[in-house]
Each structure stands twice: as C-alpha cells, then as structure tokens.
Image (cartoon, rainbow, N blue to C red; front, side):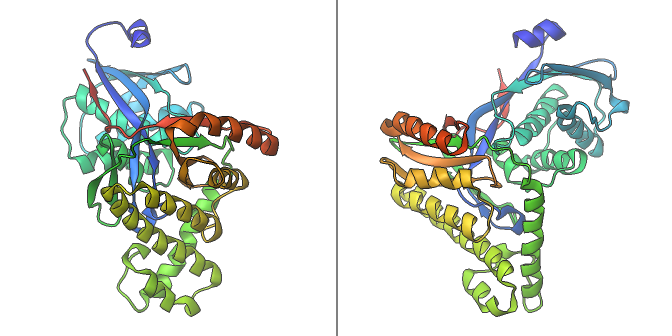
Length: 378
C-alpha cells in the first residue's frame, strides 16, 4: 500500500485481495467433466488501483519490481515482460464484453509462490477482474467473472487450463472446500474442519519443464478413451461414466488408454467419498483417500516424479500423518500432507534432512488454512 502511494500518489484507491488455491483431491478430472474438491488458501495477491481520466494504463508488479505503461488501444502480448500479460488478458476480456474502460493505475503482488502449482496466475487474473469491477463500478455474475479469468489465461496468455482454479479463487469460503462438478459447474460447499490436523504443503522445488507437454499428451490419451465409448453411448467426457462401464471396454482400449481412463473414473469416486467423509468429520478415512489418489496418479496416470513419491512415502512412515498426495498437475509442484499440529516441526526437520540427502535441495513448507475467495478490502 505504501509502495502504491509512493508510485501513484495518495488520491482514493481500491484494494482487493485474491487467494491462491490447493486441490484437496480430484486431479486431472477437471478437463474430463469430473469432480474436484479445492480450497482457497491464505497466500494472497494484493491489488491496489484507481481509474484515470485518460486512456493511459500504468501497472507495477511488486514481485518483479517492474513497471510498465501504455495506452488501452496499444495492448498486445508482451514477450519481454510476461507478468503483465495476465493483466492485459483480463482487460481484453472486459473489452470482449463490450465494456468501455478508461485508463487506470494498478500495483499488485503478494506471497503466492510462483511455479509451485498453487495457481499464482489464476490468483492474479481473478484479483484483476475483481479490482477492475470495483474501480469501474461494474457488475457481472459469479460465472462471468470466473470465465473472464479463465479466458484471459486461455486466449491471451495462451495456456490451457480447466475452470477449477478461477472458480475456487473467486468463490472460496473459509473453513470450506468447494465440491465442483466440472461438467455442469454445479457446486456445493463442504466443511473442511480438521481439528488438530493441519494442511501442510510441501514444495518439491522441482522445475516443471515437462509438465505442459505431458499434460497435453494426457488430455489426448483420455480423449481417445472417450472416442471409443462414444460409439455406443451418448457421452462427452469420462465424468459421465462409472468404473463399471469402463471395465466393459477394457478389451477395446489400448492398455495405456485403459490406465488413464481408470484413474479418472476412480478419482471421481474418491472425490465423492471424500465429501461424505468430510461431512461426517471422518478425517481418518479422508486421509486414506489422499494416499489412494496419489497411488493412482503415480501408477495409472503417471504424472508423479521421484521427489513427490519420496515425500508421500516418507509421510506414510511418519507419526501423526493421516494422508498425503501430490496436488495439481504433478511432475513437480507440491504435495499436501494432513498432519497433527504437534508433529509438524519434527516432520519438517526430518523430511528436509532426508530430502536434501536424496535430491541436493531442500523443500519449502507452507502451513495453510481454507479462506474466503477474492474480495475488496476496506
């Protein structure tokens, strides 16, 4: 805030904070119309901004300590300062909706780790949409806001993503997860109250170079499964079939396709079971679901890596832990660990030592809680 005033002066401005997110369970199901169970977490991108009377836009990034100014009509993809494209993409979404913006000045940044799979990009997109709505006094439905964030990433930044990240970051609720059907966007809130157990994220610190190519390949492989089943059934995605139906097609699919499909249909069942366990306050069985999900992502979907497996295996043999799994796209990024508060320090120390021996780097740890979605701060 001080920095914003220092750069842009102290006339009235609006403030928005936009969280990061972690998916508790249900990975690689979103682009197949499946179920996910994410929470918004207390790592934030903070936005400060006001409108101008002319067409000039001025944007400052705290995290990159970088500044750019241009005119609304001159916005185009910036190859040098890639960080600004998330904001530009959002501005374009307003224009696509027929909204005439004037110029504005924005400063933003926060403590969401970049490249750890906690959705720093969606945090920026949804924060930017929310801020621009506030400073230009515009109204959109929740789904419109979410779609604008997603479209900015798909169409302007040029990255494929499902809708989950923007959804949870805008509609998250404290001490709750969102149970979202990615096929029809029906959703409900599920209590995420874990008593003395805490949600600990362990960041592998592994660079995810391959992740986009592997991701795109998986998308293709499961499309292949859908195409085979489509010949007999009226379906658009694997979210619409049960594990039993997939079994009937085992002999009609290549082994690799069967494995990929099996992960998705079984992961959907695990998400549904997890919701029931959380509603009952059965944290133990929810923890079992986390472990099962990891095994499936590792063996059937093959998106884990040595670092993620090391953390999960280490967790299995450590006291006070109910469950652990990779979260997000995999191949790096973070594991979530459900751990009793009193064991956290020991676990961090022991894992760090052993992980360093194995990989020559230390993991990062983030203790997080479920929080509200993006909103204006007074």
